[in-house]
Length: 473
Image (cartoon, rainbow, N blue to C red):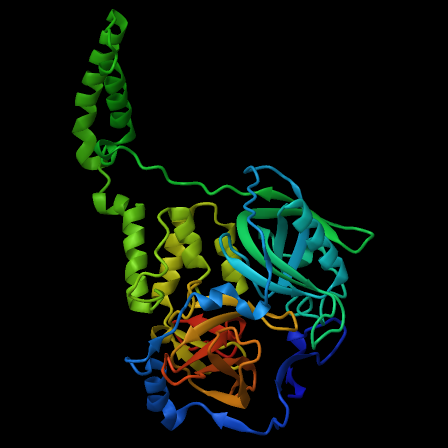
């Protein structure tokens, strides 16, 4: 079947390439479609769409492991690489920059690469089994897709913090794709470690590398339970007495020190009532308490995948902090703030606070309501917010929801390169400002659950507790 290219027009401040005043992002649709065919997806259809999203409870439940495999990328050569750089060192790594996306450790990032310089860099990194540095391009859409990358960014145009990544799967296509007739490198990256960008080097061969500082994750070590409510002076005396008591043979000097410590302990205990730290305060920073908070957030805010526990929570606080951070539908600035935090406890507490405070998602262009937090759900083991790439090399952070407002469908549904096998997609626009907001996904077989859901582009949304003002939007 023949295909035509339907263009989604962008605003001047969100161009896909350098120097083009009205750069357009293309999507491939079936031939015979007219862009005037549109369908309103709000209003009186709300109840009908909600029923469709829930689907027939007796139907076949969708296998949520399929989207995380990125089957639309085709057959790829898998690599088992897990490179770890020593913390607080400053290695020089190959640099790859990406627009509108912040890569976190333990996150998978699919890419279609058409730039020959980047292809050479990735080919060398794959052969040497060494990591690359992934940074966010702060120029917006200028470095995005096959239209971007004509001008390499400088140090001031890249985010200060990034993540090292390993190539875990790749494939080279000499014939390219329908978008671009030339070599193409299809790759899956896996985030590993946070870094701070120190300097950027542009090579004569067109490639780039950078010197980075590998950042540690500083853990809050728990104190012994008996010392949790003691002031430091008492805890010090207690530790000293404990050390003396464990000695197999007591010397006169050690006995004298132990006696002095006991006297200090008796005197210091008098001030415990005024120095005592409440247990509930200390518990706020404990991993078990924070993990319970995340479990409650899953239940209330639909961040869990399902009741079968397909995606169990990580058992350490560092992985749990990244797990929550990459699932929040917040902008690049907020995600970079998460990435800059060295303490996993602080990172996790900030994520929980944002999740509790914000309740609705609005259009980033005009401020109209698009969806609400209670409609967020997971169609992938990667969570409700995951990254996918289209044939043109545009990476889309996509938030899956069961309900949406003020959106219009455009075009005929197609299963071509569907990120969710078994579903056909249709483009969604904002009904007010015509900005591209995402896609509607409909099950090909009517016995599949859910029958219908929506995939919304994270950069097109504002996560807020109230409607943003005109100045904010």
